[in-house]
Amino acid sequence: MSRRRGLNFNKRRGQSRVLTLATILFLMALTIAPPIKNYFTQRAQISALKSQVESNNAALEQARKDLLMWRDPEFIKSQARERLHFILPGERQYIVTDSEGQYTQESGTTVANKIPDGQPWYARMIASITETQNQ
Image 1 (cartoon, helix red, strand yellow):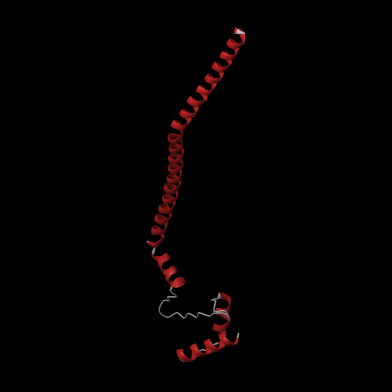
Image 2 (cartoon, helix red, strand yellow; image 1 turned 45 degrees about the horizontal axis):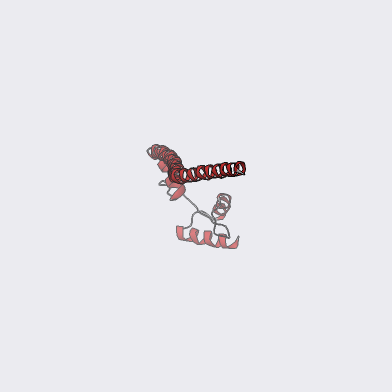
């Protein structure tokens, strides 16, 4: 009988060691988990900030290129013609829209050719409006 009790005692002692080891590992995991979580969170933030810096640098480089383009007088003149429809003295410009109100380059030449020359500007404007409404 004493043998059985000894074996039983060793069995309980082995179970208590496993339970103690599991408890220690669990407490270590609870202790280490928040710093590890913070580490990975901060690494993700650093990565996001690096990509933001890269995109900002790319935008800055594009803005520098645009600034150099805007310093060229010919570029400014071409942009004024395209965006603001400016013309030089002595030139004529016709802006024609299609039935949906969209400007089309090819329709501008057909209406401009149909308007008779030698009339006052207001008569030409009225002819241009009626021509676009008929199309």
